Image (cartoon, rainbow, N blue to C red):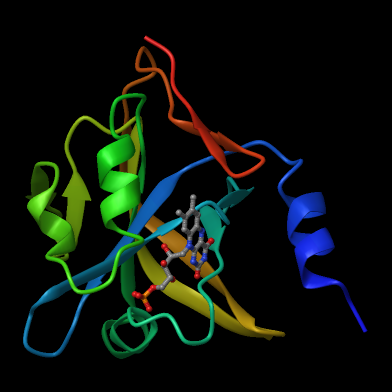
Length: 157
Ligand SMILES: Cc1cc2nc3c(=O)[nH]c(=O)nc-3n(C[C@H](O)[C@H](O)[C@H](O)COP(=O)(O)O)c2cc1C
């Protein structure tokens, strides 16, 4: 029997950035959640990975539209990260959002934004591995990222 607390702590030793994964449902209502399970995968073809929990409320919308956006948060965007992990709030009330060509909301002021088409949806225990084909992206290399390590946010000016 795995000690979940101990395993969570072990995973938490790996420093990550923070992303907001977005999509929209059948009514066109935007959905999204905070995720640090982001990984760059491939340059040719351009692919990235994010891992939503199987019960993540955004997962059905991502599957239905076959589309998701990823915004890599900048230092100073911690409030967005916190809001997108809360329930019962309008998550998009925090931050400024712009619409991609495919209708995905992407965060202004982020270090990087990616608009993706769902390429593979792979079963992985209590999470899914979503491989996204990057249809468009932009980045602001001079911005400092928001980082996450051992359950705490790290910000730089
Ligand atoms: C720093 C941080 C990182 C997170 N990373 C993930 C993640 O990679 N995958 C995930 O499913 N949820 C992650 N969560 C939790 C989600 O943001 C969210 O709370 C959870 O998916 C429930 O979403 P729902 O209320 O839309 O179902 C993270 C939360 C925080 C605060």
